[in-house]
Amino acid sequence: MRICYALLSPTFGMHQYTADLAATLARAGHAVQLATTDRYPADRYDPAMPVICPSPAQDTGYSLHAARPGACARIVRAIEALQPDVVHFTGPHIWNVAVMRGLARRGIPLVHTLHDLDPHAGGAYGRLVQQWNRAVLRWSDHILVHGKCYRQRLLRAGLAADRVSCTPLLHPFVGHTSLAQAQRHADSPAYEPFLLFFGRLEPYKGLDHLLRAWEQVRPAGASLVVAGPGDLSRCWEGPPPAGVQLRSHLVGDAEASGLFQHCAAVVLPYTQASQSALIAAAYYYQKPVIASCSGALPEYVETGETGWLVDPIGEGALADALAEALASPQRLRRMGAAGRRWYEQQREHELPSLQSMYAQVVGGASAASAHSASHIELG
Image 1 (spheres, rainbow, N blue to C red):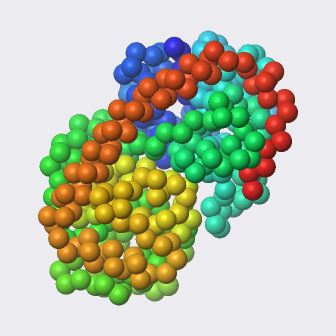
Image 2 (cartoon, rainbow, N blue to C red):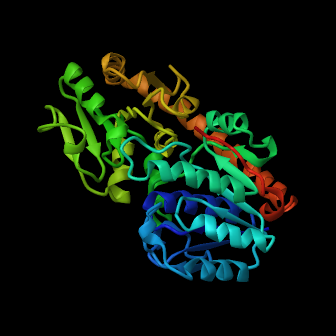
Image 3 (cartoon, rainbow, N blue to C red):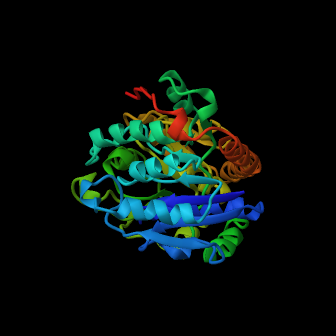
């Protein structure tokens, strides 16, 4: 099968996700291609994969400033020239809908991943996200989501069951050239007395709850590492509490892999989540997680076996979980091994699920004829 992955944005995390999908299907013998922006992070991808860059990098998502006359038509022609059996749009961009419309009118089957059915709190394009999602649903032959709760929500909204698939979010956070080192680190975990928050420092990720919970615990000899780009002052007033190590920069592959290898557990205290690949990453490194009951996160955690689930509001349960996670390295090792088993089982099921999805889409009708009437309300 000839699969074209289309990602018109230079957003780093979306390319990490796309690179993993492409590598998974390429290893299975499919002819995989990438259509992307001229400013894409090439080190995330296998250099053997064919890449075209018909999209000038104007913006990372929904901004109307990204509009450029004629750009979408050029992208449509470039993708059509690849003669794909199916095109999978893997991340959001304001141009996606126009490009999808052009491809659908040419009879090319289309898949789109919807990462967020709702905008994150404080996001700049909240109303536009919902309008854009509705347009994507109209022009897609198939939707891929990464939470069962989101599949059920789309079904309740009126999307046909054979038009939406769900797989767990499993992609790593390292690029192609760092995979071997990551595997070595993951196969030799240590459980040092520090907890890890990893990722962009955004208010919806619950950093204020985490730091207040940490103030309640403050275990002797332990620390909390907060690692990722952003400004902590958007989430927390004043200096971080004692015992908190702040690494507020874009963390490179080697540093990130070392943090996951040596931490005791990974903390995701999000107050408003969709899903997160960091849970699967923690399991890959044989580390349990402390995650809030937000979005699809509970679907990824087996309470007491692979981690702890806590209320996204308030700090009491989160503080208790932080204390428990640092109390017994033996328990961490057992839970980490269970997480690794979960990860390997999900990886085993992922490829046949994706292949079945693509085969179904290729064998069905195109969006141009099948989805002219789509009155789906997501709110």
